[in-house]
Image (tube, protein in one colour):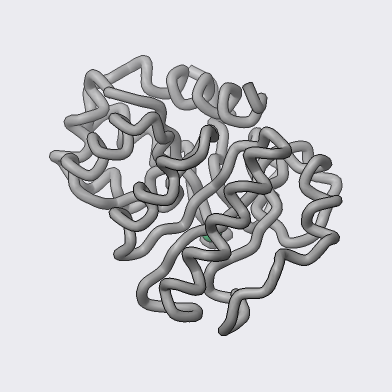
Amino acid sequence: MTDAYCDFHTHTLSGKCPELLSTPVATTARYQSLEYHPWYLPEAFAPLPEDMTTALPGFTALGEIGLDRLRGPELPVQMRYLEALLALAQDCRKPVVLHVVKALPELFSVLKRFRLRWMIHGFRGTPETLDAIWQRGGVVSFHPEAVRQCRLMDKLKTPGGSFGFESDAAVDADLPSVIKSAVARSGNRDLPQLVNAAFGEFTSGQ
Ligand SMILES: [Zn+2]
């Protein structure tokens, strides 16, 4: 078993493993996603900055983008931005990294209108929500705390879709031990290989 587990979403490069860096500006990282975080959107909708449109082709993915009912501008404003961003990702054939807080039905209804590869990051919801995401073809990147939820880890014994793990904003995140706990709690010894394959697939833009 390798220790080089892929990190599906981080804001700081560790250099220890393949990792998808979420950043608002281009860096030299091998895998980077162009961030337009819902928390920092303007209060009223305005067309996307042109430099985003020109920059996106140089990135692996778009995001994190998304919807957050508890932070950022009013939800209808966030939804307009999300639609514009998903249209851009679809045009450039880029996968998207999604942040969603208390707005999953709204997210699903917007996603229906696009053909995209998408991933929900920081997931620690219920097994039923996990199924709802997988049924729609989404990838799930688990929050490190998710490994403590037994019913959720049970789902990984025979997973119904693609998934991975992430360090997000935690600089001291120990991804190898998170994944070891997930292997122990799910009883799925193929889990590391599944995670690394899902990362390769998501970042390949296929
Ligand atoms: Zn993040």
